[in-house]
Amino acid sequence: MRAIFKFLLAMLVVCGIGFVGFDKARSLRANERRDDSRAMPAQAEPVPALSPYVDTHVHFDGDAQTVVQAALEALGRQNAAKLFFMPPPDTFDTPNRLESDFLLPLVRKNSDKLAILAGGGTLNAMIQQSVKSGDSGAALQARFRDRAEEILRMGGVGFGELTTEHFVSDTPYQYASSDHPLLLLLADISAEHNAPIVIHMEAAPQDMAAPALLGPRNPARIRGNVAAFERLLEHNRGARIVWAHFGSDSLGFRTPEMARRLLRANSNLYMEIKTDPLNPRSNYPLDANGKIKPEYMQLFTDFPDRFLIGSDQHYPEPRTSAQRWQTGINLFNQLPADVRAKIGTENAARVYPLSVRRPAN
Image (cartoon, rainbow, N blue to C red; front, top):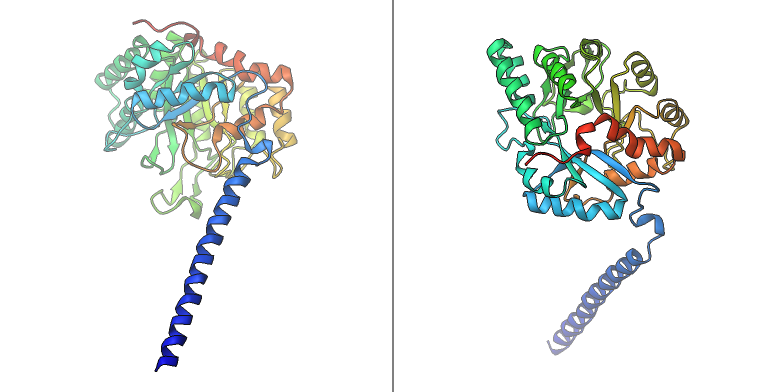
């Protein structure tokens, strides 16, 4: 019996040493990871833009003070001159529908560094409601115009983010034909007031079955939408239409060739460059080594006046292994200096002339 007791005691000691050894080894490995993180290669640290740029498409998560503070702190780290906040496209049915009005007091105090667009939570919601009800009559158009003009009076530099094809994310699936009467009206308002419209549209040249990867909460079939988008562009050439998210394509049709054709045909069309490192999707402009693919470099140099940086970055920055702004700047830094100057700041000042003056109090 005594022998058995001694054996069990010895085993407990051995196991205890084993557990201590395991914990110590785990602690050492954790310390090694911490040491490695301190000694990571330079490219793993934030890499700023080689020249200043304006990010014309960012979003917000949280209260106004936290969002604005995070954005202001990010400017120097990125060598960004200015950030344009906008809400996502949303509907009246979303419980936590967002609009950018609540940022206005702090944006006004920092108007040299920040600007807002609005309409995602109101104008877009009115369009989606109209699609469902079939009502786009005079009374609705009057309310729509009132809200659009209110956005500009309060200091908005444009209208966004609106959508004509948006798959399920934090917001529900949304569709509206780009030549919907309210969008045509907004084009007229845009031209009257020199205030661009930012549109999120997944490109479908014709009706098609939805890719399985989109998931069951999206429709089984996608309606062709490019022809209606061209009708919107043609409706009023004085309206600047900014097509968001070039470089982030869910359907596989938004190629450099499509961009080239539409840019040639429509002098009032502009495109925002977005690169999502965690979800590159189809038609991604960077190769596996992070280099700009030749067909994209050619497009940017052929149309240097028609592209903007629109990273779709959220502030405060999410706790992820990579940020959208950083891969966007990795692309930006590879552009020739003259192209970089246009895409970085010159185009933003020209496309968004309201952004260079202080909003009225």
